[in-house]
Length: 175
Image (cartoon, rainbow, N blue to C red; front, side):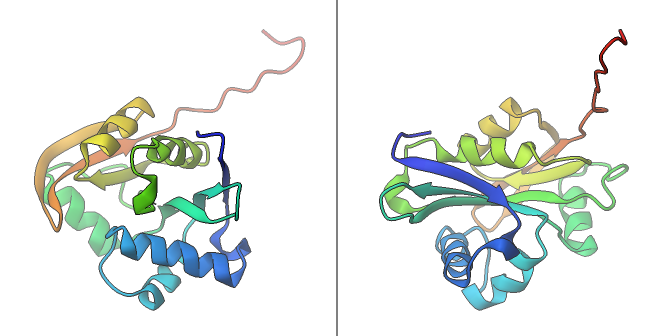
């Protein structure tokens, strides 16, 4: 991450109203979703968490991603379009809305956002993308590409999944 930015992740509802609007505007401007800023608020309020990157000077939100709760029909359609089995992902959340401000292109912020969301993932999760950059970041973060590519609004989409392994706990004196 650049020295002039810093990360934050947590509950979207913990953000102040101006920051909530800034995140929604960034997602809409980044074309990560169809619709208006006001349409997006309800979906963002239901997310499991959001990850943000802010500029130190001015505190502007310059990048965002979310671990979201998509509807069952949407989830099923993505697995069907990819010709991938949905078993184990019937109720899976989605890593999505990975966006950055236009003036922040080339700063590799999407990698930091994906890493921040992955730190919160505790159950099988999926993602879709048409971006080669995001594909590379997802693979590096432990996601696996499944099924075949399928048409999306902004190009050919690929489907990615991750199933976290059991957490290991180490107790003193126990090997």
